[in-house]
Image (cartoon, rainbow, N blue to C red):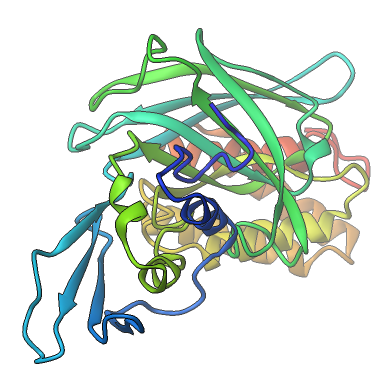
Length: 333
């Protein structure tokens, strides 16, 4: 399998330029709302109406003749986003003080596709010093540009995408209602909120090779990492060694607040509200040792419990590992 463009449609199609265009779609990310668009076709004089149905898992292209009437059957382009992922996480430390992230991926009972691969967006390729995966799954880390994952990187110009994927057909996919563990990542970076993208089975996209180039170009913003998968926030290596505490606190607070409700799936609003208030209090007190120590104690106590959902517990673990073991004022946890 070609992993140069790991999170897009990778199979070659009949016209080489189209194959390139499809892969290029992975470096184009949406930055505006999406509605149907009309595409003029130069050679035929016809029009094409491109209409995304992301929640239903497809994009529909309707041809409109010169007389304004429908011309031919609609073309349906299926997406790989009919999965219902929930990312589980346990964080441990290695003997050298680095972190080990143990992930599991569950696919909800209501999913319509099996999970074939999933990605984590990291701040740098060096954030992943070692990986492991279930039997017959592979991993690859590639450098990404900010345009690939516009909301996955926080103010950076580049980062990396760590992709875990089924290497061969014999590798176990994650069917609806099933969970697969064994995804492991070692890093010297402290835990922070990162984006994950979970993909279903790649549907037959050979129709792209038969479409006029104007339509293929119009499809690029729609066939993107965000829409071809189910984005979720979880916790992974994010802060380089030496990152100031205030930066870590502000990042947790800001990324929780900016995540869409779908990316925060599985997190109760009451949990997001409570932990956001605790992070804000700690952030506002970073310049006052006594006040900061007390606010961090309250935050760390809150994060010690593991009585929430998998996504909630991941955030609790991340904050505890990044902030609570040793404070900048010497307070051990």
